[in-house]
Image (tube, rainbow, N blue to C red; front, side):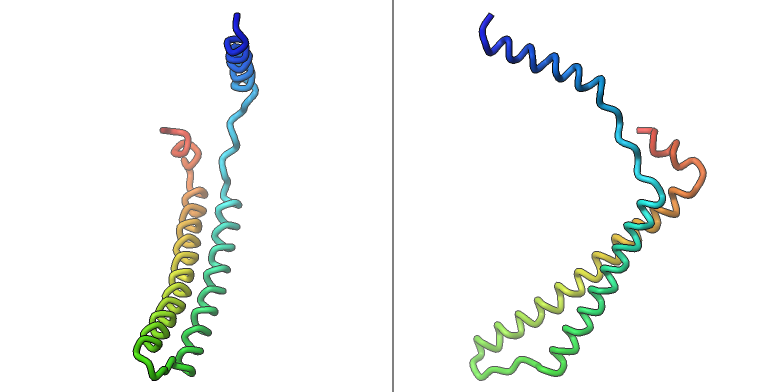
Length: 118
């Protein structure tokens, strides 16, 4: 028997032994959904505060340059900064809302049965 066949047989035996020893991971519970939701809402609130500060800064200090090209780049950067900050706010808030709804759903009767069915 060649060395590669022996190695492949050893690997197959190890996989069979490993499959029997592996147990399924426990499902996430309601507490996990709630903490994830609160964390995401907290980060969304921080992103909202950052967004307000970015908008306030650009309201007090509008970009003004003599060259049209420089003014165009400044307006682009302003739009990018404001847009990304509000995108982060929306994303965190939306994820927090989804996790909170999942938390509510996990408290309803029959949730474990619905999770087990394929």
